[in-house]
Length: 308
Image 1 (cartoon, rainbow, N blue to C red):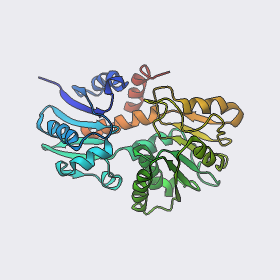
Image 2 (image 1 turned 135 degrees about the horizontal axis):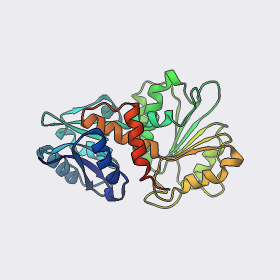
Image 3 (image 1 turned 90 degrees about the horizontal axis):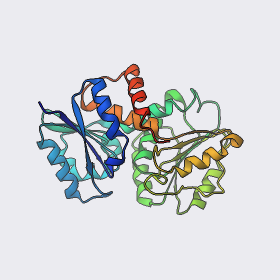
Image 4 (image 1 turned 180 degrees about the vertical axis):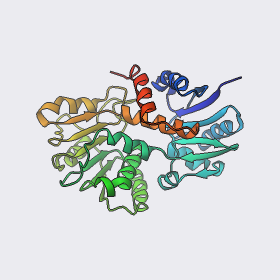
């Protein structure tokens, strides 16, 4: 009997750690499944996305997919091929997980849940309560959507930052994320800045009070070298710095690490976000429960493949 197929839709899937990790996870969870990479250039033609989803739908061995760089473009190109969207996918206008149900395709946006789970392991309980602390998110694409939506939806219980500031080089991204935020009905205060240079980002960084969270959601430092900040940038004292890249040069993270002792910074990369993103999708596609004990076992297996 042939194994079921779990499709990974990305840009350069062969270089991802998940290609080595998933077989171990599959054995641990008793899934009897293999991972299949599907590479598409960023912002591919509509026809390419439609071809991929039709092939998934028509292949009886395919059980579902995780989508990385194509979450927004894929859903916009294939909405009529999707039989059902969860509330988060409809709100965020993206699909990070596709599951086959009764021969049809169901789309989910799991990233707000994954981002919140990763932040839970990074932020101390009550971090946003009782102080003037901001979030500066450099980049307003899919990761920024997930983090801001996840934080806003959980904010009533966990507290809210004073401001959630977003900066991006593309006005259309800022307008898109603004529309999503308007549909949240949240008390979170958002600001949107068109930022054309590292100097612009440095200026936003300089306005942050102590204890603020700074996020690199631009992708710089992974497939492309560089950082959204200049060499002269200073992180806020006692700040938290989240580099969403988990592989590559991660120049932004190294800038923060160089200031960590003097500025009392806590620095993390995107590894835990990566783990939560995959485990959430696997749980949905294979319709299983991954409890804390199972997650810990999966994280231990994955650690051997983590980039230094």
